[in-house]
Image 1 (cartoon, rainbow, N blue to C red):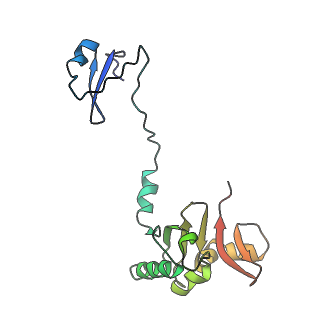
Image 2: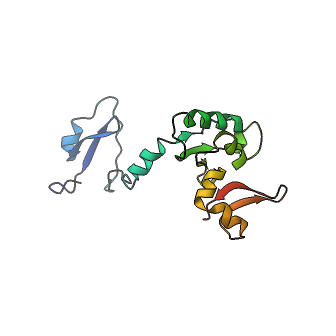
Image 3: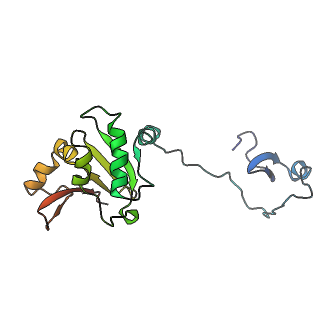
Length: 175
């Protein structure tokens, strides 16, 4: 990747870093007793490519979210939410990520009602570990207009429990 030296015959690597490129004779001087030599027989070697397409601002925002990766119950999620509410002004959004109902003692999905008990005054959205589903409390659903739309029969991804006739607060991403 050096325009003044676009082709070389040998590369020396130490502790996962390229330390020398050049002719076979130049690099041969670095071969020691513990050196592993790979003869490529004229094949091309290129440096590993790193995808620099990252969303730094989005990543930074996620660092402020409640980490639910280790939550083992809905009560655990409620406890973490209760802690965050103490430092969050009324009406401000609270976000979290990483929950997985398969790890929960209750062996069920959380519902908007589980979040409403703890946070009736702050909109809350918690994303599943897969990133394909979330749970929102009633305040978040109301602000998004989702409950009104769901009750009007518009398809908006909010799940309804036929057993109790209520919207549970699940939102799924479609592929």
